[in-house]
Length: 194
Image (tube, rainbow, N blue to C red; front, side, top):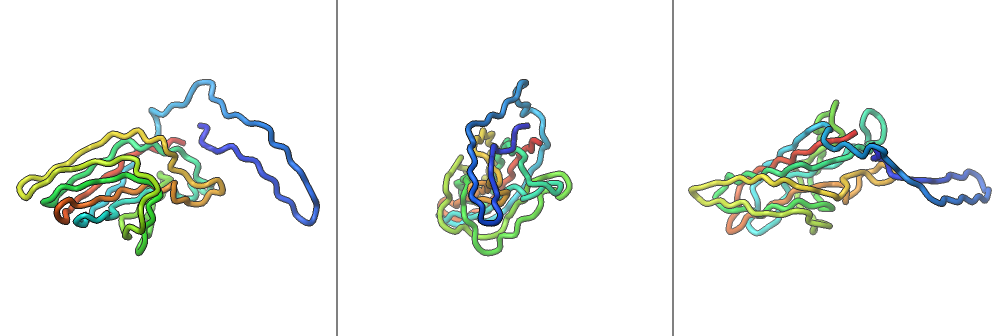
Protein backbone atom coordinates (compact mmCIF):
# COMPACT_ATOMS: atom_id res chain seq x y z
CA UNK A 1 0.00 0.00 0.00
CA UNK A 2 1.16 3.53 -0.63
CA UNK A 3 1.39 4.56 3.03
CA UNK A 4 4.86 6.07 2.96
CA UNK A 5 5.15 9.82 2.37
CA UNK A 6 7.10 11.07 -0.61
CA UNK A 7 10.30 12.55 0.68
CA UNK A 8 13.73 13.52 -0.51
CA UNK A 9 16.70 14.75 1.41
CA UNK A 10 20.44 15.19 1.39
CA UNK A 11 23.04 14.98 4.13
CA UNK A 12 26.37 16.73 3.75
CA UNK A 13 29.41 16.06 5.88
CA UNK A 14 32.33 18.39 6.06
CA UNK A 15 32.35 21.85 4.51
CA UNK A 16 31.45 21.00 0.94
CA UNK A 17 28.77 22.98 -0.90
CA UNK A 18 26.16 20.90 -2.70
CA UNK A 19 22.91 21.45 -4.54
CA UNK A 20 19.99 19.21 -5.28
CA UNK A 21 17.06 19.59 -7.66
CA UNK A 22 13.81 17.75 -6.87
CA UNK A 23 11.29 18.28 -9.62
CA UNK A 24 8.32 15.96 -9.20
CA UNK A 25 7.11 12.66 -7.79
CA UNK A 26 4.12 10.38 -7.99
CA UNK A 27 2.55 7.43 -6.19
CA UNK A 28 0.20 5.29 -8.25
CA UNK A 29 -1.80 2.14 -7.78
CA UNK A 30 -3.04 0.38 -10.87
CA UNK A 31 -5.65 -1.62 -8.96
CA UNK A 32 -6.76 0.99 -6.44
CA UNK A 33 -6.40 0.49 -2.72
CA UNK A 34 -8.24 -2.22 -0.83
CA UNK A 35 -9.50 -0.84 2.48
CA UNK A 36 -11.88 -3.72 3.11
CA UNK A 37 -9.04 -5.77 4.56
CA UNK A 38 -6.87 -4.79 7.44
CA UNK A 39 -6.38 -5.95 10.98
CA UNK A 40 -9.18 -5.00 13.45
CA UNK A 41 -8.38 -3.66 16.93
CA UNK A 42 -10.12 -1.79 19.75
CA UNK A 43 -9.24 0.15 22.90
CA UNK A 44 -11.44 1.06 25.86
CA UNK A 45 -11.45 3.75 28.53
CA UNK A 46 -13.62 4.61 31.52
CA UNK A 47 -13.82 7.84 33.55
CA UNK A 48 -16.24 10.08 35.40
CA UNK A 49 -16.91 13.07 33.15
CA UNK A 50 -16.52 16.30 35.11
CA UNK A 51 -19.57 18.54 35.47
CA UNK A 52 -19.18 21.11 32.70
CA UNK A 53 -15.47 20.29 32.37
CA UNK A 54 -13.74 18.42 29.58
CA UNK A 55 -12.27 15.17 30.90
CA UNK A 56 -9.78 12.90 29.15
CA UNK A 57 -10.99 9.32 28.71
CA UNK A 58 -8.85 7.76 25.94
CA UNK A 59 -6.01 8.65 23.56
CA UNK A 60 -4.60 6.60 20.71
CA UNK A 61 -1.45 7.10 18.63
CA UNK A 62 0.93 5.07 16.44
CA UNK A 63 3.97 3.38 17.97
CA UNK A 64 7.18 4.81 16.57
CA UNK A 65 8.15 1.36 15.23
CA UNK A 66 6.41 -1.84 14.18
CA UNK A 67 8.57 -4.96 13.77
CA UNK A 68 11.64 -2.73 14.30
CA UNK A 69 10.92 -0.42 11.35
CA UNK A 70 9.36 3.06 11.33
CA UNK A 71 5.59 2.68 11.62
CA UNK A 72 3.91 3.93 8.42
CA UNK A 73 0.76 1.80 8.47
CA UNK A 74 -2.61 3.28 7.60
CA UNK A 75 -5.14 3.83 10.40
CA UNK A 76 -8.87 3.61 9.59
CA UNK A 77 -11.23 4.50 12.43
CA UNK A 78 -14.43 2.50 12.09
CA UNK A 79 -16.63 3.38 15.05
CA UNK A 80 -16.92 5.01 18.47
CA UNK A 81 -19.09 3.43 21.16
CA UNK A 82 -20.04 5.51 24.20
CA UNK A 83 -21.85 4.18 27.29
CA UNK A 84 -23.07 6.43 30.11
CA UNK A 85 -23.48 4.61 33.43
CA UNK A 86 -23.93 7.79 35.48
CA UNK A 87 -27.13 9.72 36.08
CA UNK A 88 -26.45 12.72 33.80
CA UNK A 89 -26.02 13.10 30.04
CA UNK A 90 -22.56 13.37 28.53
CA UNK A 91 -21.09 15.29 25.60
CA UNK A 92 -18.29 13.33 23.89
CA UNK A 93 -15.75 14.79 21.48
CA UNK A 94 -13.30 13.00 19.22
CA UNK A 95 -10.34 15.27 18.61
CA UNK A 96 -6.73 15.53 17.54
CA UNK A 97 -3.99 17.67 19.02
CA UNK A 98 -5.31 17.53 22.60
CA UNK A 99 -2.47 18.03 25.09
CA UNK A 100 -2.62 15.71 28.10
CA UNK A 101 -0.71 16.46 31.30
CA UNK A 102 0.04 14.42 34.41
CA UNK A 103 0.39 10.65 34.10
CA UNK A 104 0.37 9.99 30.36
CA UNK A 105 1.87 6.53 30.00
CA UNK A 106 0.96 4.96 26.67
CA UNK A 107 0.54 1.17 26.56
CA UNK A 108 0.75 -1.09 23.49
CA UNK A 109 -2.67 -2.11 22.17
CA UNK A 110 -1.13 -5.48 21.26
CA UNK A 111 2.66 -5.66 21.44
CA UNK A 112 2.88 -8.39 18.78
CA UNK A 113 0.19 -7.54 16.25
CA UNK A 114 -0.78 -3.85 16.53
CA UNK A 115 1.19 -0.75 15.60
CA UNK A 116 -0.70 1.51 18.04
CA UNK A 117 -0.63 2.44 21.70
CA UNK A 118 -3.28 3.94 24.01
CA UNK A 119 -3.51 6.04 27.17
CA UNK A 120 -6.43 6.30 29.61
CA UNK A 121 -4.69 8.48 32.20
CA UNK A 122 -3.80 12.16 32.44
CA UNK A 123 -5.79 15.37 32.44
CA UNK A 124 -6.76 17.85 29.72
CA UNK A 125 -4.28 20.67 29.15
CA UNK A 126 -5.69 23.47 26.98
CA UNK A 127 -8.03 22.92 24.05
CA UNK A 128 -7.76 20.40 21.21
CA UNK A 129 -6.36 21.53 17.87
CA UNK A 130 -9.43 20.17 16.09
CA UNK A 131 -12.68 18.45 17.09
CA UNK A 132 -13.47 15.86 14.40
CA UNK A 133 -16.77 14.48 15.71
CA UNK A 134 -19.00 15.14 18.71
CA UNK A 135 -22.29 13.90 20.11
CA UNK A 136 -24.50 13.54 23.16
CA UNK A 137 -25.49 10.44 25.12
CA UNK A 138 -28.60 10.89 27.30
CA UNK A 139 -28.91 9.59 30.85
CA UNK A 140 -31.12 10.16 33.89
CA UNK A 141 -31.22 8.83 37.44
CA UNK A 142 -33.45 6.00 36.26
CA UNK A 143 -32.21 5.35 32.73
CA UNK A 144 -28.77 5.01 31.18
CA UNK A 145 -27.97 4.99 27.48
CA UNK A 146 -25.33 4.04 24.97
CA UNK A 147 -24.62 5.20 21.46
CA UNK A 148 -22.53 3.89 18.58
CA UNK A 149 -21.22 6.19 15.87
CA UNK A 150 -19.76 5.10 12.57
CA UNK A 151 -17.16 7.57 11.41
CA UNK A 152 -15.36 8.44 8.19
CA UNK A 153 -12.19 10.13 9.35
CA UNK A 154 -9.94 11.50 6.61
CA UNK A 155 -7.39 13.08 8.97
CA UNK A 156 -4.22 10.93 8.94
CA UNK A 157 -3.29 9.49 12.33
CA UNK A 158 0.42 9.09 11.63
CA UNK A 159 3.92 9.85 12.86
CA UNK A 160 5.70 12.93 11.53
CA UNK A 161 8.04 12.76 8.53
CA UNK A 162 11.01 11.95 10.81
CA UNK A 163 9.13 9.05 12.44
CA UNK A 164 8.35 10.83 15.74
CA UNK A 165 5.03 11.11 17.58
CA UNK A 166 3.14 14.31 16.68
CA UNK A 167 0.26 16.06 18.42
CA UNK A 168 -1.90 16.04 15.26
CA UNK A 169 -1.25 12.30 14.92
CA UNK A 170 -2.80 11.54 18.31
CA UNK A 171 -6.53 10.81 18.48
CA UNK A 172 -8.26 11.60 21.81
CA UNK A 173 -11.77 11.23 23.21
CA UNK A 174 -12.84 13.77 25.81
CA UNK A 175 -16.14 13.81 27.69
CA UNK A 176 -18.09 16.48 29.55
CA UNK A 177 -20.83 15.87 32.12
CA UNK A 178 -23.95 17.96 31.52
CA UNK A 179 -25.63 19.08 34.75
CA UNK A 180 -23.50 16.85 36.98
CA UNK A 181 -20.49 14.58 36.90
CA UNK A 182 -21.35 11.31 35.16
CA UNK A 183 -19.54 7.99 34.77
CA UNK A 184 -19.01 6.82 31.20
CA UNK A 185 -17.03 4.43 29.04
CA UNK A 186 -15.81 4.59 25.45
CA UNK A 187 -14.51 2.11 22.88
CA UNK A 188 -12.66 3.00 19.68
CA UNK A 189 -12.73 0.40 16.91
CA UNK A 190 -10.29 0.65 14.02
CA UNK A 191 -8.32 -1.34 11.50
CA UNK A 192 -4.68 -1.16 10.56
CA UNK A 193 -3.77 -1.55 6.90
CA UNK A 194 -0.21 -2.60 6.11
